[in-house]
Length: 293
Image 1 (cartoon, rainbow, N blue to C red):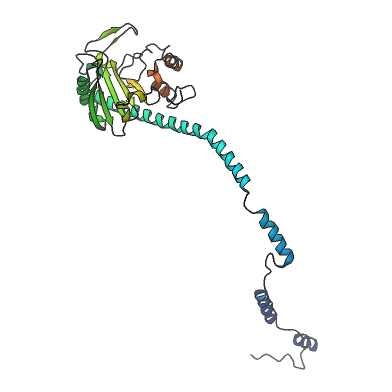
Image 2: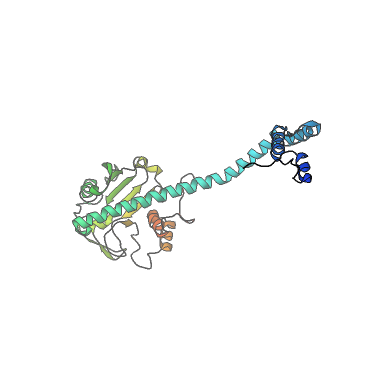
């Protein structure tokens, strides 16, 4: 098909003249785009007025003066001095709680496993005398050691009293320090009005660090030393639990009684307080290092 020339005389003359008088749309669009691409964009700060504005803003953003820096550092130092000791103490408390809770869990599992294998603790082998380290070691090796991760163990004897204790170093560096406070026969305990078996009076001290074995002066009950028993006077049953020896009635087995015992000097109740509080250290818990006293 062939298109007729618009300049043909038969076409409308007003349309032909209008088309000849206008540029094609594509030519105008391309020229406009080209001008937009090549036109230089204005730069911030050009000219005298722009330069003065930039200088003004830069001067405001300039570094602090020495006095301002020192004042700021002083404020930071005061805030740090006020908060840092509290943060350190809270961290230390949490670390202690985690260690004691872990130890309690591990020892409870070991004791329950031994009971499942050998029967009730009241029927386990006894001792010929109190504070008998070698017999305690034999007792420990027979019943508990197979269920614990032990690095080393040894008996240590006090020169003045002749009493001996078993020290067991666990895999995490903590220590079991234990001895027996009764012989091999049951005896009437007038304080609790119950008959106590020899295995019920095995005192076990948990030391959070093996360095405390020789450095006894650094041992602090409720901080890095905690006392446990294998006997519950309240239930008259044999299992591993924190020391609650005088709490032989429901009226005495409560937090208030434990706290009063500690305030009265019997700090062996600290592990029981910690467990009673859901394994946390509350504000009235006697967590004091020697530096805090």
